[in-house]
Image (cartoon, rainbow, N blue to C red; front, side, top):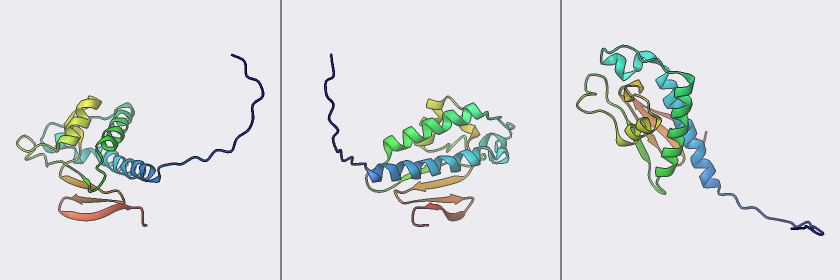
Length: 143
């Protein structure tokens, strides 16, 4: 194949801003979970009396990759996603929500490295959490 004269053309690109916004929100949510995982005293395993599970940088990288991909894939057009974990005392009977279970299974990480007693709501414009009975806004695009 030979290329003769190549003419320059003006091209207009259209980017889906809402998709970029979702990626930013999900990335912020992921970083919150990573920071909580790094607080070893909050690990479900530690609260269950099973000791601390060490987490490597490679484990955190796997978690980030799987979390971002999984949540973006399941993010609703309207509404929110809720992620939650129980505390160590009730973990055997209650566990965690199905999204986090699937994320940890896909990443091949033990679910008990997750922080205990957290509930997170990820909306398209904000992230709210309830952490040990304290409700707070941790991220907002309006800030």
